[in-house]
Length: 358
Image (tube, rainbow, N blue to C red):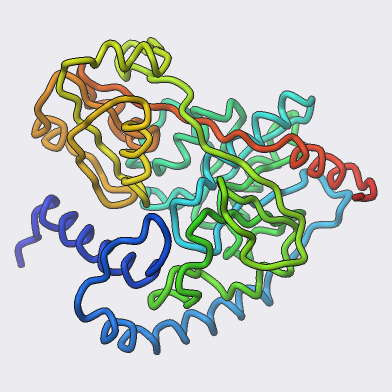
């Protein structure tokens, strides 16, 4: 049996994602147009959503918590909603800030869509196809040791064996992985909230929203409203930092890059959960780019870049780590940073030290 070309497979996946997003997020400023047949699709997906609920409740019952004084403390920064909330930039910001405050920090990733599933240490120079784009990005941007693996408990064991051992491990995702014993759980939400409130695949929720009430805090991206009451809430924004050239590493501030691009065609490449958000950011920086959206975590082949015309190609950081070996002189990435309110870091430190929370 012949295998479908990668381009056709990715196009089919992108079309399915658009249809599901229209079903999952029927309201809000970024809501896609609702396609015909959505009601029938929702009805067909209902039984699968009930199965998701049963699995999620069983997993939640198996979650274990580390004693407050145990080291390393494990802080899980995760999503209840599928993709695109700003979780990874928030995890990177937390790892960097705790390091700057004097803690020995490491980070943990699952390695989604990676060729390897075993537990391993990951560096900024590793192949994203082999280790996962988020794992390599975490290693490149956090400045701390990173481990990845489908079995997060095994990856954590690698970090615990480091000398000196970390005092804190920041896990980028992992709320739904009971094999990872955790100290603190922080759920991230953006302006989409819980969408239609239904479980996968009928909605965007990985587990029932009610499970968040047993977590420790919420991180709210931008002007997001808290999806439930009774938990400490902290706010952050993901903001442009600078543009970085993929070949020589030189940095340009957004205004300088906009000046460089003035009057020249710019192509924008985004294989993330919400590519429109990336394109909107570029427009806000004065860049009118031809948009090339790809499915989240899509693999980028040399032919993908070769098929994009123009003297400048701008991509997300998550796509940049996948293009390290195939980038040409046209390629730049817009690197972003999560600006989290300082009260969040103070709250984390109080919890780590076992001090009372006001």
